[in-house]
Picture 1: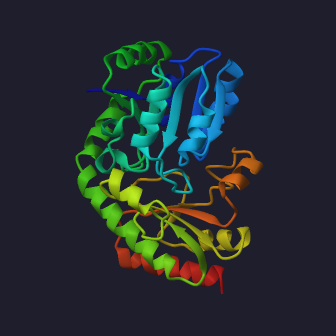
Picture 2: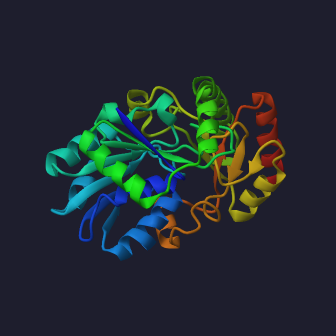
Picture 3: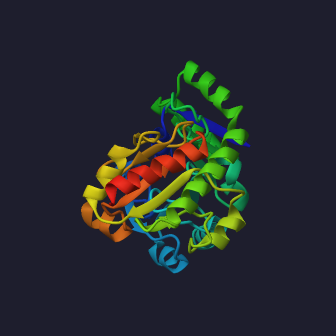
Length: 319
């Protein structure tokens, strides 16, 4: 019913948190985008917002984390970078049944609006880093919030105007261009991403592959229930440690080493030293973000070229 755009994905997060006041409490998924984690810990918390990071794949942990002052539940699914899934419908019901005035937000960046619809599953706000799949051309930074509730929209509209973190006109033009091919792109990302995941799963040089479309994913059934498909995001653990992971990333020819995702081109990164370097080491260890965890954003290139690229890089990294 309503949607608002912002200068960046984190700007949209900032605006949501401004719905709260000092003394309010946020329950957040423990495994979230590194920038979200950093903002909650280093910006929101010093302003008097109480933050609890919990494993939202476990409903008992969510229920245990709720406090009388809980005003916001922040979920991300699939999570970045470990690809865990949060049951949006179950978490939304749990939070709303226990805290009538709490707002449930779902960061839907990894799936885009094409493959996952959190509002129809009970969430109050869906957040997108438009920078990624929704734009899809790696030439814009932008964020967006969508919601059904008139009151939430009216409050956010005031904040959008007051805080000023709005996108420029040309960026809006570029995103409108990108959205025209969203359906076509998402289908191809899914095809290529699943092909790479299945290829990696067969490799003796890989410890584990995490992709919701694989039958080996522990929440594969949930993926089939709440998602219409999967994107090009693939996480895997290479045999060895940081040396093998670094060699693999350096040897790739088609994939580009970069922190972003969801563009037309294939990208790769090492979250422990890139996107999630700001997450405290003990928290990274607890989440399983190890130095041999590699995140791929599989793009739209020819799938045979992509498979050949990861194969030759693996052979050089793990002889």
